[in-house]
Every structure is written in structure tokens, then in C-alpha cells.
Image (cartoon, rainbow, N blue to C red; front, top):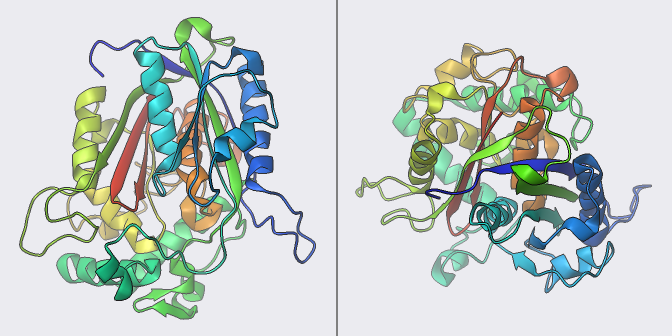
Length: 384
């Protein structure tokens, strides 16, 4: 936004991402339990009370009508506007962008962005594709990603071993994150020997589904209760499909930029920063191979260069450009409505220097990117 008021993040909250189905000794929690837990944590972190929140934007996908109202109803009924946002895996980041815009435009001073989900079990078969493509099975996520992966391998020379290293890296980082669903590392051999899901993708190339809640309190800088290590929003961008890339994958003949490239370019222009300025990155890794092309399309490396840089350790926790420091979707888990806000929260946590054993030294600027069926692409850049 041009000539916009500066927007700060006052506080964040999230639950551990896990399965809360009440089976095998696991607790039973609904989306509104997880969402309200995250909101209360964010309020406490911001040192604010619920009555100070002037509006709320709530992202979810499978939670049904008025999910935000149900969640917030467990905290307090103050008459504020509550907007429910469904934008597939970018639902939380879309809610964040709306909250950011309301403060930047001086409509409100303190706004909540929340994301939550209790996921259905089994493959995600999205309804975002045209009916003829759904009949052919394009909307079964592992199959769709398998086709994109084959194309990426053909164009870049990447191997199965290359994107297996993404799983190894992210699971190693996730072992340092108490809120991740998977908190144990895996070896390259374990990834390569796991069962095939959709060739060339194997089980440990795929992110686990999960249930979880996330929340962020945004405000004008004047409303901050604590101003130590203030984190502000440098850019919050959302784009949809471009010609030739309407449903993901892209045409082999049409060479227009796809939605990831468009969103990244807008974020660089709005923020005034470039790829070389990023101290920490959260890249969208619903499948391990996707992290590689994501980094390239964001402009963080050249086309086809990500596998080599991964082998060289550039994206490791102690590398030049640490990626998915909290384990990413691959280790943290993927509750659709909560995922993209969790990515933003990790960037905030890193910039504040509060990431504990996974802390990137002296991180000051970071980027979070999420994709969603539609397609849509969200990019958020935070700075200290």
C-alpha cells in the first residue's frame, strides 16, 4: 500500500500442530478449541485484553460456516466485525493481509488475524479445479505434485535424492521445534526407502496433515504495549493465477510469470528489499520437491540452482539463507487454515531472537511464502 501507516505485530500465539481426534490416547479438540487457545496466547504475548481488538479476520478451509464466530465466541462477544476467510492453504496469510490493510489504511488500530483447522483424514481432494480435471484426478494433491515434480526434474536436472534432502533438512529443524507434529529427524536412506505415494514422490517427501491453531495481533506502532525489538510488516502480498498458469503447473508453451513469481516481485517492490536481504525464509513445502522450485521462483536463487545450493548447505539452519527453520510443513504439519500464519509467526519469532535452539543469529528481515489452490500465492516480509 502506498503512503500507508506502518503496521507492527504486537503478539503471536499458536498451538502444537498434531492430531486431536481423541483416538489412541490423543486429546479431542475441535477447531474452535485450537483457535481460541492460540488467540488467548497471542493476546497474552501482546499484553492486551480482548476488548482492545477492533476487528478479526479468521482463516479456515474445512471448518464450515461462521467458523471465526464460533471460535471467537469462546473468548468474548463484543460486537466487533468478524470476517471468515477461505483461501485454501493461504487462508491464514489472506486473513493477515486484510488485518494489515485495515490498520495501514487507518480504519482500525488493533486487529486480530487467526487461522485454525481440524483436518479431514486421507488425501486432500480439492474442489478448486474445474470439474473435468477433478474427474481425471488432477485435484488429488500427491498426483498433481508428482506431475509437477517430474517436469521440474526434466527441466532442472534435479534428482529424487535432491528433494529427499529437503525432507532431511526440515525434519532436522523440526526436531528443535516443540510445536511441530514430527519432532524426530530422518536420514536420507529412510526417505529414499519410504513407500511410493505417487511416483517419484515417497511417503517422507509429503507433509503430514495436522490440526492446529494460530493467531497474530497486529496494531499501529502507537498501540504497542512492548516496544523492545519491534517487528513491522514490510510487505503483505496476495496474487492469483496468471494466463497459462490458472490451475497450477503451467503451460509448456506459454511463458508468462506464474503467481509465485508475480507475488515475489510485488513484495520486493513494495518492501524495497531484495532476495539478498533475507536473513531467514519460510518456503512452501507441502511436498519436498516444491520447496526447491519455490525458492527459485521467489528469486532466492537461479532457476535449477536450488538442488546444488541445498547440497552445499546454503539453506541449512547455519547456512547463508536458512529455510524452514521450524521444520516447515514437512515437519511442523499442515492444518490448512493455520499453516501460512504459522510461517509468519516463525519469521516473527526469528526476528525477535526468541527461536531457542533453532535461532538464526542476528536475523532482522525474513520472508514467508505460502501457496493455495486457486491458485493463489501469499508473500509476507517482516523486518525489525
